[in-house]
Image (cartoon, rainbow, N blue to C red; front, side, top):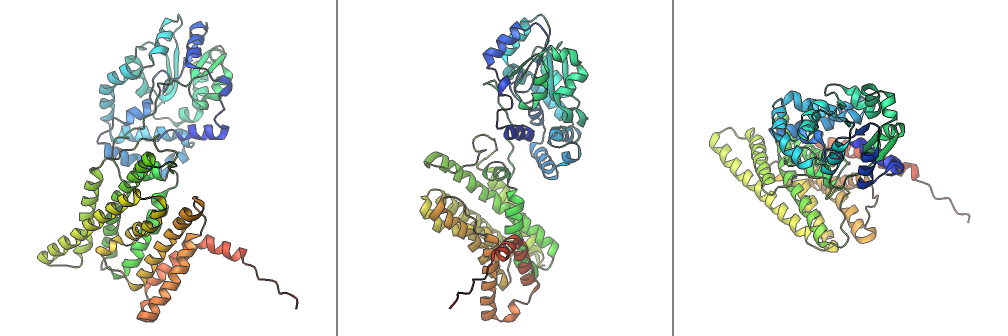
Length: 494
């Protein structure tokens, strides 16, 4: 993903932090040609029309393992210990370099192609006509930038860049790097050309500041052609919402687990098997999200798409998700069936039956999602519960659940459908219907109905207690709000 600090700076300043220094490419080229003092040139997306750090990461192989490593770093966020988001790329590049050391060879072999294709030819031509050699100043990493800069025709050009295994350079920024590498006197009489609003201190300290956005420049996220389940949800469909953790794991998976764990022979393998089924299910459900956005962008007059749709590149192949889903589903079914059946023949038959059922669930759900995507918005209100039922109950094809689990899953479906119905029928904006509190109330009512039908013993289980506690925990904020806003009606005088 793009450097988050760039977005923070733009957001904080309203996008106008560098407006007083903005210059068109033509104006910048003219200024560089006429300036008699030193010229400090940014590298990424200026002299080099891409991002060298991301292009280096893109050379890591195998790409899937490298991408998994980067996602682990994004979850752990170790850069919080080293100075914040500015040091994020240091962690990423160092991790790739240490664990995938052959990436350097791949980078060296790819440099000639990148140098020829993505050098800023207009800027290069002007720089090479100057009597004074320019200085390339970048927070990119020296061991990555130097060979690329040489291949672009600037082998003898001074380079001030970040050290790969140092957090200080990325943390301090170009201003301090320039002061340390060139001196205050050189900086004060220099022309600086950059594209980043993060270079504001440097622009304020030089003789001729130019912030120029080059129309040919483009940002490509490293390993964006590598498919990984969950990437589309995290980057495109629900960016910045931690949807996988907050909605898929803390809601869907939590209810899968709490509804069935009481009947499991081996709780550990049961959890592993359910996680594999969750991966299998959501790999295909995510494909439905991809199709939903594509249909909306193509056929709807007022599509509701995230801000990153069409801007952030994420691999969305058609076949690979099914390979992931079928393999993860097969292993998950095998794990869940293994404890209940000791005889080899019986185990094979049970596996085949359950796996066939699971594949049927995936195909049916995907067909339902595709149909939903092509219906008008008002008709979707009545198809939406089918998708929520699939999310909540797909695992029941493989594992049994306790009676109180029916109440929990039914309440979960209702709590998801109610906001959507209001969204479509009323405001076209997601209302605050307090779904967690709705789910808690529905769960209690449905549980009482089940207890009345099957007897009180159906509710006196650890699973029932766990589901009640989890529902209360998830609804804790809504409960507090409801209690705090409750008022007794005043008595009227008679």
